[in-house]
Length: 353
Image (cartoon, rainbow, N blue to C red; front, side, top):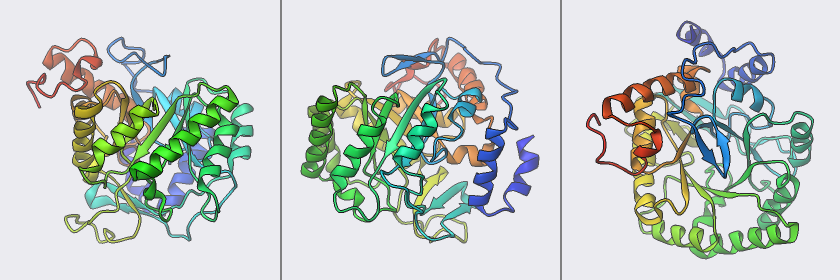
């Protein structure tokens, strides 16, 4: 069904198409109709000690203003991450700022944390209680004088509302945000966040979202900081702003973060490298090019305990989570795997990959 609609949707500006998708989900125009694996024991798991139906989540960026998280749960996703949210409302970067690279099954965005602001979004969630596990991705306002304080302000707003909070230090569209990958700067930020959690008497799980463009030598340093600060999970990874010479689409040199198939292998290798150091001490949420059972399978084998997607939904449609579960089930049966968790970090377990 979606394949028939896709050519029409792709004639629209990507940001307009996204707005229509949000409106359709609000009105329940996108029913979950093909999920034969709903509540399948193969996929049931826990995230931050809470039961979820499956380890497939929606990455931040799709539901920026927390408008349709419950509709996404109804589509079959195990968890949803809204945002990125900043303390104050901001427009983001000038349009056009989202580009489809159809030939590469990718997107480039330079949105710049466009959102309605923390209080407005918190009020929206409070008036529409989540029916599944909801994370909030937070970041600083573009013109802030104190980025530490912006993270803290968002923590104060959401620590009683969200099921977890993701610290976004890796968007390529906010100038110098990635400086927080520096070991000392990251340690300082996480210490401030943990101190504020104590002040708030909060046990909210903290997740850190990392860039796919970091150098190998940074991986053990970042891992050490995360372990010392008792970070519960790491998201690997955000969009990439590295070279696009190998891409085919005419829009490949647009400025912004690249997502989708071209970064699949890059993010999977990053997961492997982090998993070699942190193992299961810190849960890994794998993101980047997930659009099928085989791409999800590879993320689990590399060391991810959970996966997220966004661009995959643009290209495969709103029923993607159910397609992935169906394909995953077939792969697991072939490999004699009884639960997806048996795959995590077991690169040698699969006979078919």
